[in-house]
Length: 230
Image 1 (tube, rainbow, N blue to C red):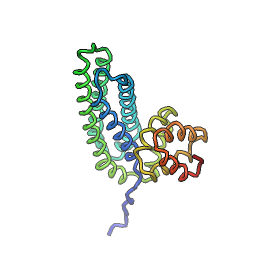
Image 2 (cartoon, helix red, strand yellow):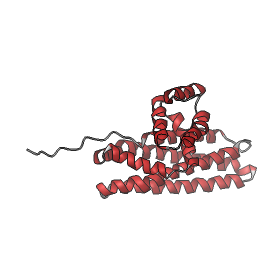
Image 3 (cartoon, helix red, strand yellow):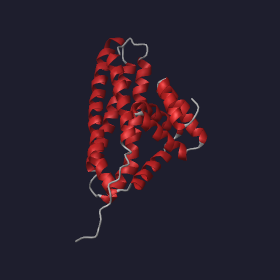
Image 4 (tube, helix red, strand yellow):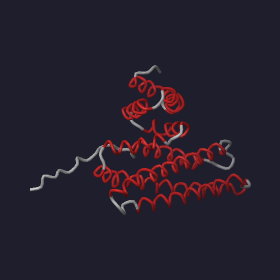
């Protein structure tokens, strides 16, 4: 009989909140891009938003490459090869999308519709691949991480990622993560940030990310759950 007991599986999920936010943001931009035409007066704003979201998605990959994959590789050597390949494929997609954005921006009116369609189709392919990739991370790799690490260790990985995030990036991420989260998730996320962040940073996140991205009812609910004035 063995007296060695296996570690209870951890439950902390640092993939879920950001993945829900990325799914929401990508879906919104995909719909807008499909509805855009060459005469759209808001085309410049749409292309800027597309660039910004690609930057957020790339930043997310960088965080995983810097913190999650080395930790996983240290305890399960060889386990991150598939993840690294997917990330390299995503980065090629970002280059393709940027090339098409520039071509749209520099295009003559007569060719803009065809270029917009090409951009829409390339971006839609990236969205499909990213959705599949994020689902694989949550369904396959998260249980591996939870089996190899304790909740405290997983939260330390997440804390290192958060500590390296600039205030501007934190606001940009908050604007997609908060509206994609459930009401209890929003309260838990911001309560955790409030516990470690300076008071002015937390207040700025509430005003610059939560208030503009949530409905008035959702924002009031969030404030009530956090015990702050709306």
